[in-house]
Amino acid sequence: MSFMELYNQTPFSAEQMLIIDENGGDILSVVVKATYQISDEGITIADDQKPVILADEYYGEPGASSIKYESETAFAKPGTDIVLIGSAYAPNDHTEQLDAIIKVGNISKNIRVFGDRYWDRIFGIWFISDPEPFDRIPLVFEKSYGGWNSDDQNKTKEFYDTNPVGTGYMASKNKSKRLHSPLPNLEDPNFLITSPATQPLPAGFGFISPNWQPRLSFAGTYDDSWKKNRMPLLPLNFNRKFFNSAHPDLISPRYIKGGEPVELIHLTPNPKCAFSLPEIFPEMTVCMHGNQESQQILHLDTLIFNTDKNLLFIIWRNSINIYDKINKVLWTEVKMISR
Image (cartoon, rainbow, N blue to C red; front, side):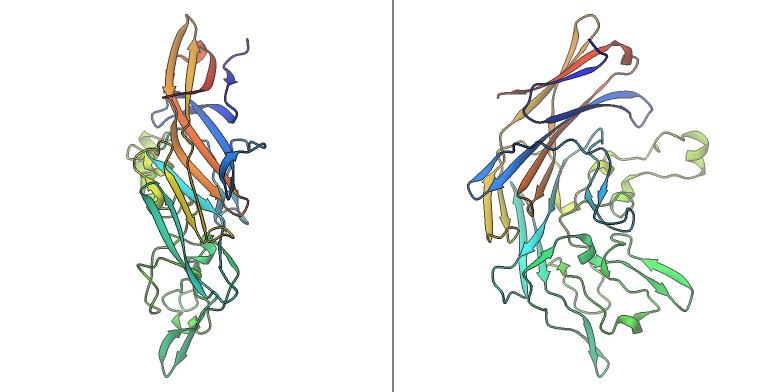
């Protein structure tokens, strides 16, 4: 028998990983990832089960674009991330704006989607042009408020730290360049842009990059004291909320259990798509020398909807402490249990 072999008794993909936690201790993390096909009739287990993603995948150049799929190797998430990759679909050829809505159980988020617009000015008064009709608009942070711009006067660059890849942000000394500059397509309907001074939080359903606020605020303090007393471990004020990478409005503080109703409005070619999450409960068993076993229920901590490809990814995860026991682990098994 090979060391730490993983026996996957589920119809889904699974990975186990040895990871160092905040304090330098060894933990064994197990991830189960299910791929479902979305149709008008509901969801079914897909024939092609996608593997666990081990590195971030970007829409464009890493660091200069938003994350499409984040690495699924975090060893813990204190709540459930709800993420949607896809587009807003117009119900007719004359649509200039609509509300794209996702609901999962008691968690919901609404984004106002506009056709292309730009800033204009008459007699010194700024106004927003009428939106152009659209068929489909990608729901990426590049089309939400944010971005960066150069301050020609001071030879510096300014960026919006909650979304450096977005649209519409203008450096403080460069307001004169706003004429005919584009506005974001995606906005929070409760905080719409009404003037050049409006600086809303970015609206989106996708992953928040680890170096964007507010996620970055949970990463801890990397100062001289950390370098002297803690490096290479994570700072003492590191918060595991950092591992939750969904938009703050789409993080459930309690783990989603399964069975919750889902509604997707204007997120598929049909105006409304509705179904319920499967009630599935994976369990991990870790066997060590001496026939010692540890059993843990896996937490459903990530939901990823890819509505452009009609796919739903469900990720369950849990970890066990194997401090000073790494050489005693024989094998790990994951299986489905009933409740």
